[in-house]
Image 1: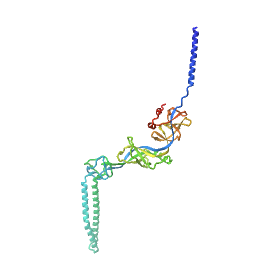
Image 2: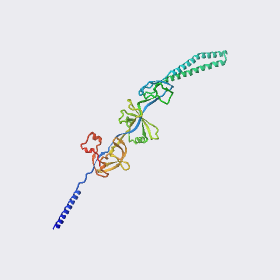
Image 3: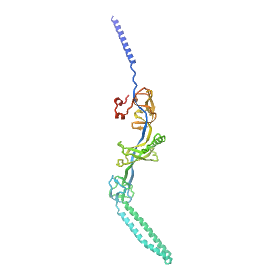
Image 4: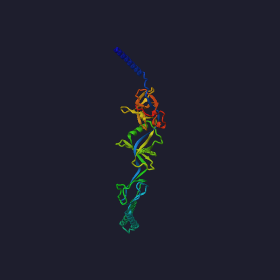
Length: 400
């Protein structure tokens, strides 16, 4: 009897377990399907894009003059303050003028002696010429008198040159500035001996307003710019075609714009680049020689530019840029892109997208090509800062 009851209970338990299994299976089959993943998209549209190129460069003085003595002598006095602004013609050093003044006085005395002898020799030559007509003197006497007169005239010209040379050398004892600008430190002190055109400059003057900025530009960038101009994919604004800007070492923008002056005509074979020179006004002397800056060159305007957020672009296994778009059926497609350059937090797209394409900017990690997705408008960080949306979950990028 007990054995029969045991079998009965086993049968009941078996039936109950089967019933529970069937119920669980039915519940699993009847679960609703998962909704499509949500992605944020940007609708592609053509827009006017100002094209710029940022290049590193260094400043250089507009004019530079190394001051060297033109005569030998003792430097009596330095007549400027180091680091100050000097004017063209300002006396910088005074070299001892005494020996040069003596040389000038000596040359003037010799000139006076020669000029004093000239009238007597002229009269003598004239009298001999008249006496020769009466045969009162010999021809040789006239020839000697004429030669003496010519020699006296030559001596006068020689001593006049000596006087001028002595006067020039005396003037060189006042070492003056050939240009206006800012002078650096002095390489000599009072009492130093200066020699003519010595290798060591006494001081250096640099004109800083305006100032040059020299920028190396690769030939690749130069050819790319020329090609775009030939294809008419970019035009120039007549007023801004040559305008350039500077970003200083601390990241601040220089307040004054400069002008593109010229491109060098030869390519540096070691760097495959040409030097582009700009000139900037520098009234407050903010820019100093050899300062590192970044120059923003305005190349022109692309009237049909396409910009998409940088986060919408990824790379395939070969490194090619790609983007995911949502087609008319609401499914994901992959497009290979050709990128021109970065414009802030966006990419300028050369090819691969057309107006009207809906590019996925957020949620790319959750989808694959061919998947059905749900779209919501993309709002970048700039819009979020200006007006935070009510749904704060949209500010958090997907991590899946």
